[in-house]
Image (tube, rainbow, N blue to C red; front, side, top):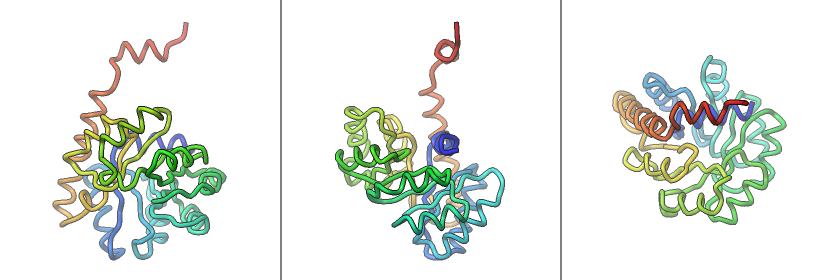
Length: 222
């Protein structure tokens, strides 16, 4: 189940980080993004009644709903009981991957320095949330980490915009997390931006995909 969840997030390329001052604003943001084609969402625990919202969204078919800004295992457990399929922390919480995996949920652990990223990976994180990515050096920083740790899945979050989205993916990001740059403004403007984010991620994915003959060669058997 965790592999299917991570594949869904990676396939979307961009995961909206829903952080709003009210539940109603979160509902409007998800509705606008959903109308543009988004099917995976991270609902942060700083959003009022976040667990309730996660439970409601999780009952809708075809959505991959996760919990973000999770501070401890108790909070993570409540989110998973509500239906969260992935849990995200903004900092290094080494005990969390085991707790999440026991419930069939994916776990994305926050880290910044190379040492923290290594510890998150060794703890069993399905991916490492590099936060705040842009403040740490942006796509160049992600590229530098991937050069020495190509086996670690990185999810840059913090300062990702439409302008630098492709650069992060080219640097080796599994996918990116985007907050206010994607979800802010009116519902109409959010929907329009959302469509542009999805198109840009899809364009990169199409360019990066190996040719059909290469895929057939790599997956075929003698």
